[in-house]
Length: 496
Image (cartoon, rainbow, N blue to C red; front, side, top):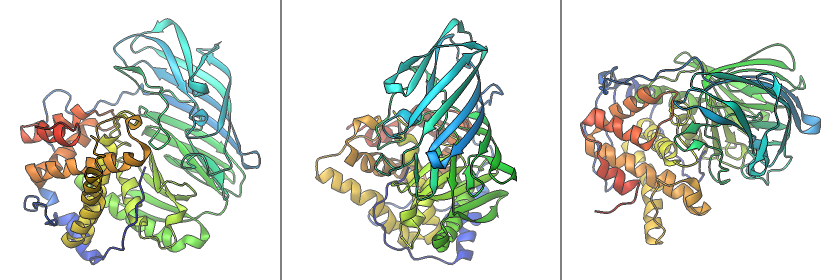
């Protein structure tokens, strides 16, 4: 998700110079009052095999990740989704599971809808789940417990009513202005970790979903006048009917619009698609250019984008933007020449690396994706616009907000759960102060090692769940030192 403070227009450098910078090397940048990073190195000199500990150096992607088979019938006239779902779930933990949870995100306060689940079966037998957390979670007792590597199959039918107002949270789940935004519109299994099942309700100013990767096969029917954008790749052989497939993604979102226009371009083998309102064609074209540039840069700096498509979709969300696997939504308030459009698109595209591919607990450890995504957005501006603008961006986006925080006596460590922050401080502390940690690390170890750390972190934890220790281990592996004092100071707020 992207915060949205005002941003002055940036001065562009020629496109050819940008391309040379991305493909040929890093642009040196001396920020006002901030020591310059190490001398630039060419991207070609980055090792393709980053030094890592011998064991577990590459992530193992189990073929037994959850599989979701969904049929969704969307009825805009009733603001309703009717669904049938089959989920195949294998216990990939080292302990037997005595229960299993389903999350019903439309029933959380931040979504403001209403979901009902009917005819629930477990391995073909009817079950009556316990309703938890105000109807946002269903608990299924398992008799006998599900042993490691054993599999169960759930089937169910459900309905989900969709709000017709933007007064709920960020209007991320809503039918407004002919656009129906449907994230997590199906019951889904949460993450099980060392704390058990993660089913807490997140504050409405943070991201709500903490999930493992899964495989999706989805059939969607809707009025034939609507255009569909969704996670993964969708095909259609008749108006109003689509089949979508997505591999190794954390959740599934679909956006349906009555009047969308589209522009597309192929970037490094990836189809980048921009969906926009007819009156916002210039903004839609700009969003496409920014997304393509960001995709190119981040792939060079962090590691390859592993999917075949990336969709940028204009919606009535009241957030600046919101990230989903292979798709991001951008607020329609930014499309009519708003100078903030570029920052928000670049930010949400960076989330495809940090949250999408490398997962983390967005509810309890939000800094791990948001701060790194925010710093990645700064890197986009550094490469595209050069040192003078980079210095201005750094000061405006990170240093000035942090200085105001300190002067107001409101400084907090970024390494806390979302719920620990007052709503007005969450963005400044987690996004902006958190980004200062990554800059401090870059100053200390230099560009070559800093970007090697990010590539190691991405490579080792792609399609998994990373923790702060995962990042520190990548720093240790590349630099020989976890630089824990920087982490203690900037993330944990420890002095001395």
